[in-house]
Amino acid sequence: MNAPRALIVGMGIGGLAAAMRLREIGWEPVLVERSANRRPAGYFVGLFETGRATAQRMGVLDAIGDRTDTGSVSYDIDRSGRRRPGMGYGDLPGGPRLLLRGDIEAALHDAVAPRTEIRYGTTPISLDEDPDGVNVTLRTTAGDEVTETTERVDLVVGADGLRSTVRRLAFGPDARFMRPLGHIIGATILKEPVPGHRPQDGVVLAEPGRSVWTFPFSDHRPGLLFNYRTDDEDAQFRRPPVESLRRAFGPEPTGPVLEHLLGQFEQADDYLFDSVHQVEMPTWHTDRVVLLGDSAWCLTLYSGMGASTALAGADLLGTLLQRNGGNISRALREWDQRLRPFIALQQRNGRTQDLTMFVPQCRRDKAVRTFTQTLLRHPFGRRAMKPLVTRRFKEKSVDIAAV
Image 1: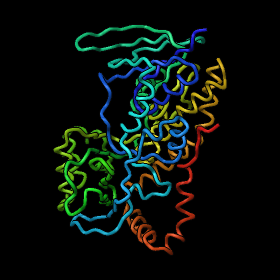
Image 2 (image 1 turned 180 degrees about the vertical axis):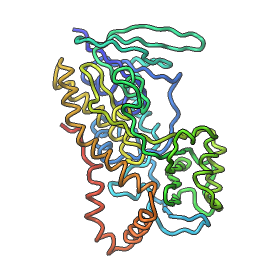
Image 3 (image 1 turned 90 degrees about the horizontal axis):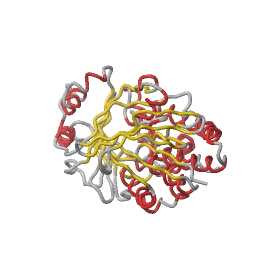
């Protein structure tokens, strides 16, 4: 018998992990990617125990590595440059590994590429599903040449990100599923250290409705992340990104550190400037099409669980397809039912507790943040806070793909 064939759209973490797992269970995956070649390494991500357990089971955890700098110290600063001991991302309970997105993608790519067909510059333009499979029309662009082909597959996996083409073709327009959180992010990589700080130190400037973070790595230049709340997302994109950032962090004088970081963003060779959304859907699948990762749920970077859930979702998908034999629709139903409560919890936290950790929404949030950090710096305070903090981060350690 011929192996069942899957078209996987998107060569991010979820798409590569799905290709790896489907190959392992005897499927023939084909990966297509809109970009003309592999994406650059990208920016900061955290990998919590949910993702680490999955990566370990898949045999790629060692290749992913860990860029956490154990000698790093994090500081909360104000605009004048005054600082006090703070809490960086690597200090969170659960000990997330600090990585670049590309670290995970590279480890998966090395495992997948030798045995998997990969097509760059290719995207689906139509899906025609019937009970026995899906006819997919693909458009491939190579230089000035554009070709279209229609192919037959048993399953389509949409792992093509927040603004997913597969989701639009199979489920409807973005506006039906994308929930705006009213925040904008700007991310890049620092070329120069923060004035007055060591390269391996992290800084956080957090004010009501806006913040800026740096993320130090052990063997890479630090990451930089701006965040701010807005009531008019569209207006933010009618100006150059750095101008929108300066308006969001005004009208007060920037001070030496914030001015330096804004200058670094303006001079960056590459950056991300985007609005923040979650994806909310009543189902992530039809009988023959399934969405995975940001295409399906987009937890946002504030949750810290995007990479972990993309890995876990792909791992679980492979396991349930194998257990259900040729009954693809039943496997997808079981996959959705098992993941949904876990993802719903991550989404709730992502738009409440996780969001306010990155961007205090009001003066009270700022005061709570400062008070909590003060407590955690003292032994008695750490003991008093431990049950609450442990419970708060326990859900980021669930091995949801272990069945």
